[in-house]
Amino acid sequence: MELLGFSLAALMGLSLGLLGGGGSILTVPILVYVLGFGAKESIAMGLAVVGVTSLVGAASHWRKGNVRFRAALLFALVAMEGTYGGARLSALLSGATQLLLFAAVMLVSAFFMFRNGRRDAASAPSPHKAPVPVMVLAALGVGGL
Image 1 (tube, rainbow, N blue to C red):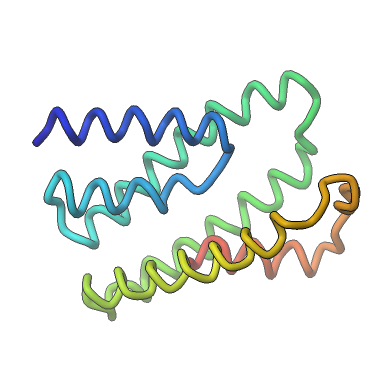
Image 2: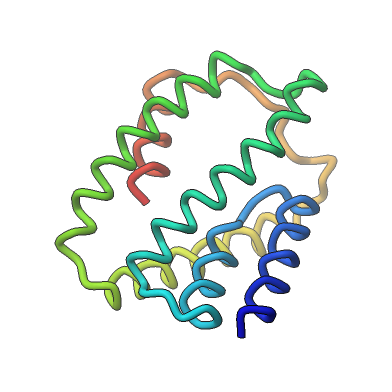
């Protein structure tokens, strides 16, 4: 079973490298259903796994000049506050409830990815500077989730 778990973890890392995101959607089910960890532990471990993996991926983008450091730092600091709040709230929820919420977030994400994925890449908006209040609200939401 551990060999299967490690093999799936390697595939998850490969998909993170290829796709650039969505790691917790893959990590949590592997930890819960393949490796047998509890829901709460898997969600916490998934956060660490995806965080480290994302940091490694972000380093190469930083070297290429693709990272707006000030925006990323602001987002990260506010998201950490949201994560702290979300972790405190998670103590009020059972592991099963957390997995149900996790599944709902996965379905909503899949819907928007499918809907937006049908658009032509050429018609995608160019990156722009988001207003600070919008960025703060987004970071709190991401961190809380």
